Length: 129
Image (cartoon, rainbow, N blue to C red; front, side, top):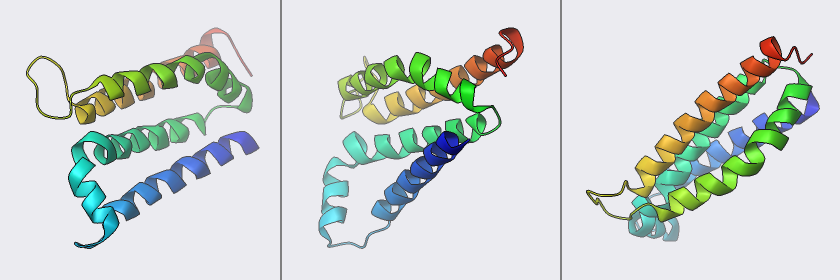
């Protein structure tokens, strides 16, 4: 149970940290960085952190063994693939390829849905207790 709570705490901290970066005043270095690279970097991290906090809330309802299986079987390959796909997203609006922000939203939705399906299958089909 301690591992799930640590994951939840870290993801909540990351979400609050990203929110605090988004409310800085005009004229600061962080605001200049955000206005320059906002759609390319910061917005995609904000949406990805929202999906991580949603995933951690889902996993709090399942036991620690399912959480460890989820880390070892799902996240070990999903994180690198999603980061590569987000990095491949276009910075500006392009009609052939999604932007990094929309790619982060899509990867977040895929992560939440796949986590829910994975946890339910492990719990009820494979009877992981």
